[in-house]
Image (cartoon, rainbow, N blue to C red; front, side, top):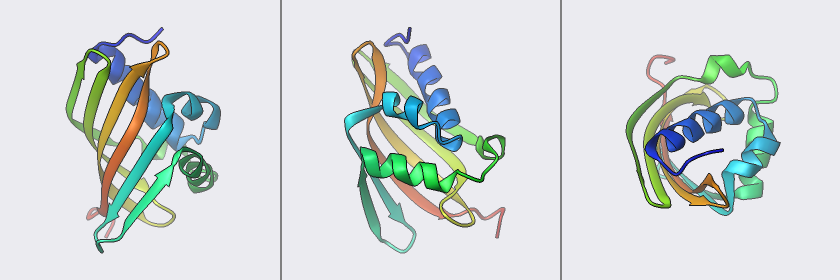
Length: 132
């Protein structure tokens, strides 16, 4: 059982990364809230906004031929939990339908139905300079 604590939130972030890069749609469906919104701002200024089913479909397609262990790099800059709300600021390096990108994610969680769920992600993506 997940706890609505900082440790519980940290564990859920680890699950989110693992299930995301392995395209485990069943587990992601449980982590992503029904009202999920993911907004990605690219270096070119384009904003893409997706709802839950669109995100699940994108992840399934993006990681179908990838080795999950190759995409677990992360750096957590901030992780806080207070009551039923949590927030994580994290950097990741993952492919977005092409070359590996450096993505900074601001993720809002809610503790609902006895588990942490992602309500909103706001992401800024740019080319990974190590891959250029």
